[in-house]
Amino acid sequence: MEWQAHLLDQSVSQLAPKGEAFATRFYERLFEEFPNLMPLFHGISMKDQHKKLWSTLTVVAQGFRHREELTHTLLELGAKHKTYGVRPQDYDSVRVTLLKTFQEFLGESWSTEMHLAWSMALYDVSQVMLQGARPTHSHNQG
Image (cartoon, rainbow, N blue to C red; front, top):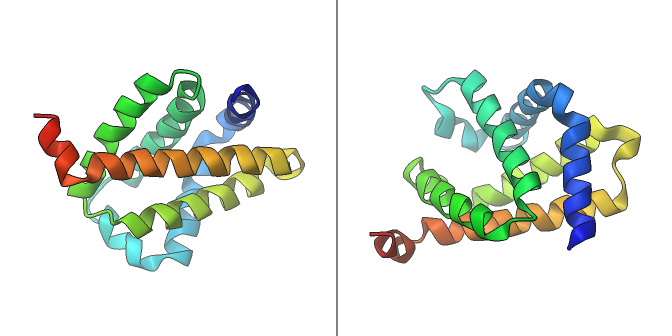
């Protein structure tokens, strides 16, 4: 869906100068609304985590036009997240928090279409990552 890829690119480009602030606010909001997720981040550098989040969002936005490459990356990411203790329901918490943070940072640029584009993309991302987290997928990877 070209319209979706365009909106994802547009929003990430618009937010790029504020990527660090976006990531910081995302984690603040995530921990405020879902404090049960805080232990997943115990002992890791949040500064590094902010960079990883922004990098992943950029990869998702750019990779939407190259689904096969993106799928491979997300399958690996899902398998890795399972080893960190991420549960399937945690993906919903992250998706909701990301959408709220996008809306906050994009302000008037955040449209119904942009919400739909990111909502669909984040749902797709979570489904592929969950597939990567399944034991059968890990065994198939050899």
